[in-house]
Length: 82
Image (tube, rainbow, N blue to C red):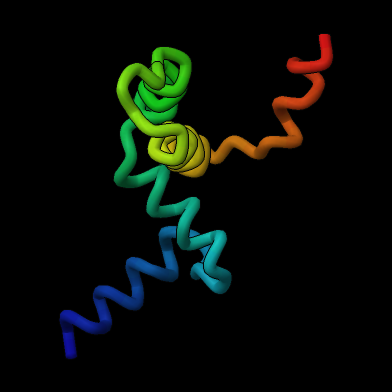
């Protein structure tokens, strides 16, 4: 009981509880993903070359890197138009 009471007390003193999925994802990202991770993903995306991959495999890699870097395609459109 002492252990549980200390856990509850710690949760109350460390801020509001997490109620939504997006809040949990954000908290886990802040705690467990290093700050340089997103920069490395962007570098991988910029250096990615098709070489001997099939087009499907190449587009899957692009999509995977974009999902991991949390890039939305609409954000890229203004840069492509110029």
